[in-house]
Image 1 (cartoon, rainbow, N blue to C red):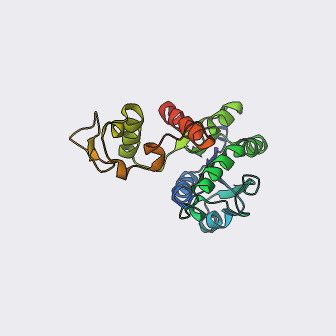
Image 2: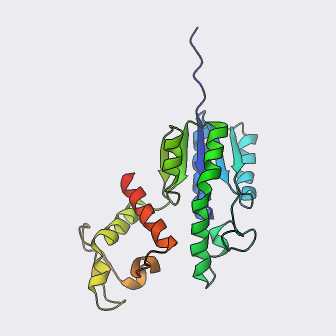
Image 3: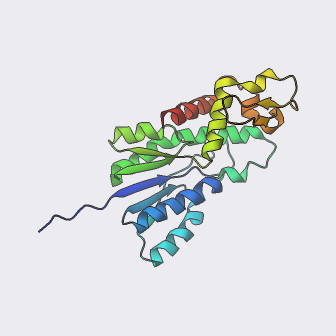
Length: 219
């Protein structure tokens, strides 16, 4: 008699924002429909958003569950219960956004505890968690990076970081050509996010962005 093939167990860890959580949960369901045991990792305040999809999947016989880790909202200087970026992105106070990203860097230890307790075979973690690679390596499992934007967007972001064409124009409304792109694709500084246009120095947020760029280049 042939030996039974052990069931693979994959962890899915989305960034705490709906635009990241929804597609990763959908991805986890796709894995589960193909016989993989899938677990979605999130925080207590985000769990209700994930649980509805998980319950519907379970009703269809799909093996999918939710595991939670504590998010240090108050410790990071955020309002109590603020565990989703969508709750603060419309506010004028950009300092809260920086604090939110800073808080995510403290999640490595609780993630590692989950890896230790449940011993999954693979970790699919959001690109906003560059430290997840180190956590996966520590437990000898592969880490796959999830990036919600398109390949074109990734190429454009990398091009801006490498060649900085936006720094060669005299105003925010003057068009510049994206170098090394097919055709003649033009942008202005007005179309770029603030963290690309401005030199943010060596604060915690800029260090995270540098880590993200390194992680993207390593994928």
